[in-house]
Length: 300
Image (tube, rainbow, N blue to C red; front, side):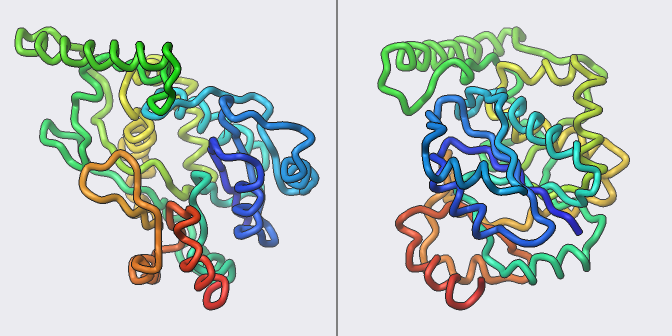
């Protein structure tokens, strides 16, 4: 089986080089999208090492991806399209730059051989009641996340962030009067879930084709908060592939409560990453050194 890893990241080449090395194996290939905000110097030695690898493609068409913004979908589709050029690929795995394997590559290969044809994506039906902090408020209001970096102290980002907050409050009031952002009556049933997944070539091909053939569907997710947590689930759970979806994405992410970002992994999470069906985990930071050392000695 051939596996493609799609890496969407705002981290520098050094960190991604380490990630690729951890995932390296025969019949593995990598497609990397560096966020346009990330300055990538062609003379960076780690960028050079990535470029020199025969199984690594670094996308030249880069998108400025902001937290919660629509352009995450745009960048993901770019990665998919690039990977789909290789028709020998069996599975595509969507990863962040902080995601690493927690099982050996031989275990990884055996797992996918045993579960060939299954689609590893989690999902749930969107309702008016919040689940993991996700509600229709993301869809029935206009959000401007593509236009500001929430972590930036720049005047432009701070001003637009404040305007976005005020706009959301105003729209919340207008909704009581029945005035809110709608979508067509024939819009597919909306599902949501985690952004990382492992999907077959045929399924990813379907997603790209659907996106191209239904521009109104694609464009409706503009100005939607964290649209990437709904877009792909909505396409697939309404598709002929639904019966193959396991509703589990093979990953452990250390979210606590309604936090917008996961906590770093430490040795306290060793049991969390140990189950047979946990193949990857996020996020690994300098705080994860002890856990990484353990994985290096006992797993990889």
